[in-house]
Image 1 (cartoon, rainbow, N blue to C red):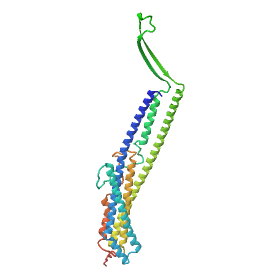
Image 2: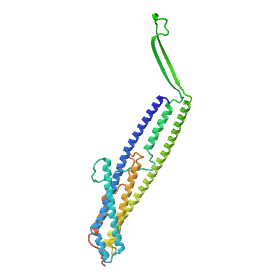
Image 3: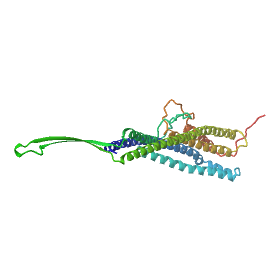
Image 4: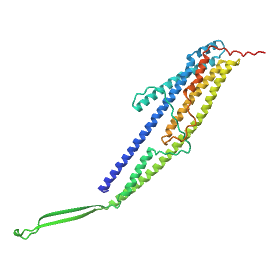
Length: 362
């Protein structure tokens, strides 16, 4: 290649590299925002599950264990049932430690990402706009941007460089002085002259070299285009897989909400039966409370997983307001903990061997 061509190619390569680095910077900023939200979601879920667990453990602290122990000693409760109730509290204690650690770690990561000291706060879940099956990818991924920049650079090189194999330049020379030869010292003559030269350099092998270089660029261009197509298909598949998981979780949340309502209603029914009907025992009521606590924790976990998938999907999308809100709004913490608080206030009123029989007059 000629010196001018080498220089121009170096300039084009440098400009392409600048474009690639700019794309990487923009993409890093985008991922940083999403990663920050992901840690915010982790903090939200850990804090919410920790509050549920603490409300559940308050039953133990308010004397439920003592009630169960006295019923076991009185022969009103099987040892297996007693141990099962105790193990439920032990599992809750372990979960309390886990959720507390998750909350603290998420808070530390938030402080690191924002380069500031963040104190514990009450997180608020934002509105998550719905994503459906017809939503197309509207953000070009970093891999595709890099490949596209390289393809455009090679295409520009192919279109602008001269592939004929001739390198040329122009020389101009001027001179002055005594004319040579001159007839005698007495009659010296002065002479002036000039010369213009055209140099053409075309070694025998240069045509083959340039042809090979052109073939190399063609092969590289074909390879990069194939890589672009392959990576685009991979990203489309990844997006569709994430979208499928997101939609499955949306259905799972709907199922969890139904289970949560059923568990809440079971506590209410057990409460009424324990107060009114003779023969029902307090263990059934406490079993309903245990079921509600597990379902409530699973509900928060499912909501958290759907939020994180929503964040990952937004690597491919730009969601604007007005596309419709999520069909499953968040259940606030007070609604979740209310059945547990009611159970605590009811169970600690005193020991109950059985509900008082309902008097009937004839």
